[in-house]
Image (cartoon, rainbow, N blue to C red; front, top):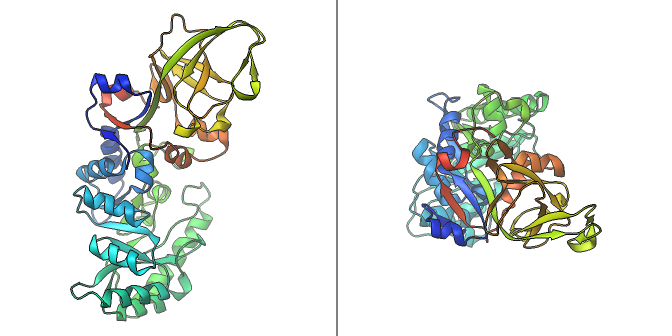
Length: 398
């Protein structure tokens, strides 16, 4: 579990070498923005897997629920247990597949709701639950594969899958769902094909006399793209954290990035022309250069492949990172920022004055996605809650 400080004192902030700031007001704002797209029949599931995409699972979950989310989504049983141990009693869907008797008993004990992906998995669940002397039928969610080619029973076999689970005495169907592979794409051909397959499968299930109480298909991309994808619930991850799954969706909602990454300067020095910097001397100073050593590195989640390819913000100015990013430290060229002192704060992701660097910027440089950037910040960086005014300096948007 990540360390978390709800209301950091100045002393705490001063002793941290590097940290992640999380704006809970932005999380609440984003939840409310997403809800504005939904009809009254559609519930919002806040996906808080991977420690809420690096933002801190329990605190984000509590914030999202207070803002109006009704469900929570996690990937693993321990993630669900962490929420329960924090006193959260909202329904929690475990999105990953689980099969062992120990996993099944833990799901039942902690009142989690599992995803069932195959008939075999359903039979194992029913058998293990039958051994419990005291239990109610366990709510389960049937996963169909409509084109993601990941977890789930083939959509063509949905009716047989539903009939099997419907006959098992220790299980009760809580929902049927699938996952969109290309929901955020401007070209919606594949998403429409998946939706049609999903609706065909549901019609076949209903023709067998089974009426699932809840249907869900949309992720963040689907939620922002088309209301016909909303059904009875949407499962939203990235958008809750203030990022858009695709650039063309930016006009859909006013989302606020909730995460900033900051670190302190530990040393300032001047190097002469011809001096190499960091491992391999991939950067060599062409002229006299003032550099600052920053107390954060790839062990904290700053990708080493950003070496010599990223900027940071110092006193509201962009300055270039130079040399190889090392495990615990990186160096920046601060020749344009006079009189820097040790202990000053550098912003790696977030806003400082009129300048802003986002997870999307890093992702574009690396040829990856913002999801990976957010999930990459390691556990030794404490998560610290900050106010709206602290994080965006007058509600300026990244």
